[in-house]
Length: 114
Length: 113
Image (cartoon, rainbow over all chains, first blue to last red; front, top):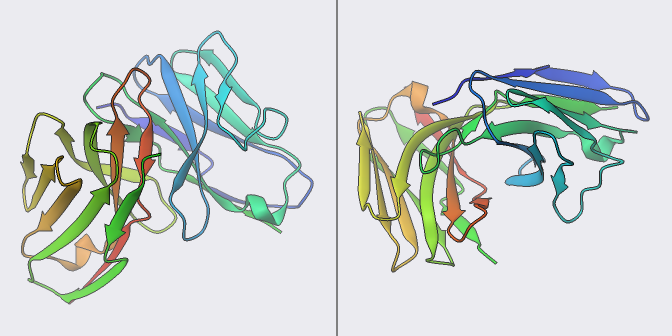
């Protein structure tokens, strides 16, 4: 399975600012997935990032709020923009290296907005 | 829309006990089912993946079963240890082209020494 390095592991941010989260994978992957896990809730898919094209966002998530970059097959960033306390969550990236071999997740970014 | 339910929401057991975590899903047309472990504030660690053609998978003290017809999966943990304390998440992966993953909220397990 793949190994994903996710940074930062946690941060406390002021409202109105932005935070960029990075994920580096040790294998080349076509798609990378970004999730949000709000306190006490399950994981919700934010968007799917393909190299060389615009990310595909799920209902309720927009590019202006969560811009994503995917410059190559091993790296992606998610930015949480103009943050409010409601953005306080754990953000996770995920990949599936080989079809039918399951998903691998990064170590998560615990974001607190004050 | 696929819905995934995990019961119980929380479980506290003494060390050494065997236990079962349950996961149910509404759409039986699944591709795979994956069990994860999540420590507080951290990412997900994959425990077991069951493909739709399989009925169970084993890894060490863990055994996961899948019954597509009844929409159920169970995770059996043998001889529980304090280090097993974590939240256990069930993820259902749908079939049909683009693979979408639906997660349960999880079962929070505490193993008391």
